[in-house]
Amino acid sequence: MLVRVVTAWILLVFSVPILGAEVDGFRVWTDPEKTRAVLDLDARADHKLFTLDGPPRIVIDLKRSSLDSPLALASEHAGIIRGVRHGTPSADTLRVVLDLRDEANLKSFMLDPVGQYGYRLVVDLFPKDRVSRPVKQMADLREIDRDIVVAIDAGHGGEDPGAIGKSRTREKDVVLAIARELKKSIDARPGMRGVLIRTGDYFIPLRDRFEKARQHRADLFISVHADAFTKRHVAGSSVFVLSRKGASSEFARRLAASENSADLVGGVSLRGKDDMLASVLLDLSQSATMEASSAVADSVFSSLSHMGKTHKRHVEHANFAVLKSPDVPSILVETAFISNPSEEKRLRDKAWQRSMARTIADGVQDYFYLSSPPGTWIAANRQPVKYRVVRGDTLGEIAHRYRVSLYSLRRANGLNSDTIRVGAELLIPTT
Image (tube, rainbow, N blue to C red):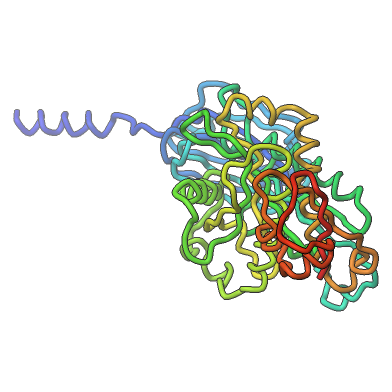
């Protein structure tokens, strides 16, 4: 009798279906390289992917999984995906089918919970007929009167919304708008040309961002952001450069840690990679690049200080992964605090976005008129840089900011002493 009871109990236990994952979201993002499909899951799920032809499609089988509501495809982000559907080929399998417009190579990986997201199954689709652009060789750099190239990186994107304001403003949206305005302002200046690293709503891994700048042979890389803080009254813009040692403040350290987690939020498989992709990132001995980064950061910060409140009275330093290019001077601009209701409103305002973009471009132009690379149009045609004195300025601080000697600054402006008046316009000697 006891044997029968034990046997019945074992059969009962093993006949209960093992709970699996529930699919509770589906999103698609498309960038110039690929189309990414993301399935949100409430738990890990065993899965299998395979392709079928006639017509081309991707089949995703999820074991012991379920779906409560139909999957919807956003047409504006669909890319190579023509449609999505689902079914149950067997009692314990949920099948999701991605109908494609053309054949594609695929890569998939599962992401663990991070930030606002739970488990995610990521499927990247690369068109088979994609033709990669050849990277220009060093010989191509021997141009006469070439444009100075400014690579403009709008932070976050796609899966990673960045910081979100009280009125639900998403950082990824407003910084893309500012980046587009910055490109327009750069393009309008003789001898300068802007290139957008991110042209739409999709995510780019941090390392790929500065690699794209290098492929464009950029003279400068600017990453545009809108930071957030726990205290809503905190306000003002900031300019950051890569730190040789540590962060210049606790706020800078926390901000860098937050921004550096973007790869985990945006969806990058880090399996088999060294910590922070150390084997391919910057050797911090690249002192010339970092020195140039500091110089352009000072120039942009000076321009921003004329526009309005800055968060600090100086350029800050932190270990931002996106600034670790070995040979392209790089800065990160936090345009405003999206966590501040007043600044969140400004970030959404088109006129303010244009003004911010022009102000950043002014600082960039000032830097390159002072220190233009040989062979560029600006090197042959540059105009003198002028600086308008504001309250609190000293002649020594202005000389330090523009990296010129105090003697040359006095001489260029016919000054017999270090006394300057607010509103006076100083001529900055070029180098």
